[in-house]
Amino acid sequence: MQDFLERTDLGNGFSWAAQYKSWDWAHYGRFYFLINIYQGDEMIKQLKVFVDDHIYGDSSCKLTDAEIREGIRAELHSLALCGESNTDYV
Image 1: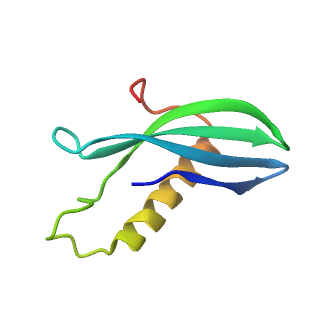
Image 2 (image 1 turned 90 degrees about the vertical axis):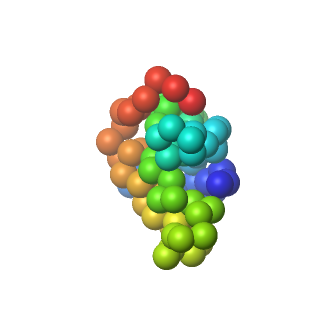
């Protein structure tokens, strides 16, 4: 997996970027990220989040790596809009 460091607009002067931290493929099939929320150039909040790995890297997966990354970007965007962490683990 990868970082999503290019800031993505949330509207009203807010944006987000995410740093990939870890992958728990053995137990939960989750990627863990830190999402930074910005207002202008100032980071105002950091969220600890996980998203499903969509069987990333499994040869039986019907999605391409690019499709999985785009889906994860969309999930991260939704989590950033929510503004709340969904895990304590990162």
